[in-house]
Length: 211
Image (cartoon, rainbow, N blue to C red):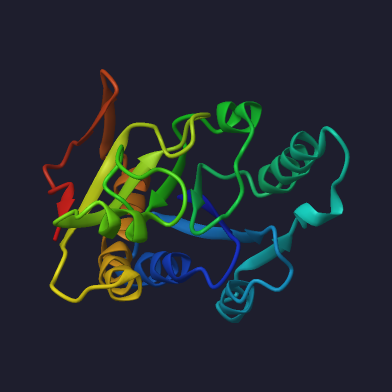
């Protein structure tokens, strides 16, 4: 039985999708905890209502020159108290330090709302529209010290339609994220992901592209 810890900063809709899929599909895993850097994160109430332990490590409580390192050290201490096999970032809006990412190397997943390596960082859909992209999407990847990089586990592709704006694109991409991210987490806990030469292979032959 694998133990999963999920990090959120807000509503955590991908966290909700993972929690529901884990229960509905009978994964060999349990959601051990949901942790937020914001005490007002709406996703905490959802987790509590499903009997999942929650914790808050408020980044605003840390100040000074080494505040990022101090925050990450405390966050790591809290996470490791739940002994996770997998750490899942689900809308966790913090840039993590190299020491933190190294500690969870090859056992930390993130989802980013673009077809990486395009449009790392924020405002991905607005930037894609400005560039005239014909397709947008989302990427699940293993986390490394480099922001929005790391071996790609799965991608979802959404065509841009006439009249689309940032909100309409985001909504359609998010609907696919809610299918893709639980699948990627399930693959991990079932031991169906292999990293070979920096590329991730789904060893059971399931499609790593979603549309």
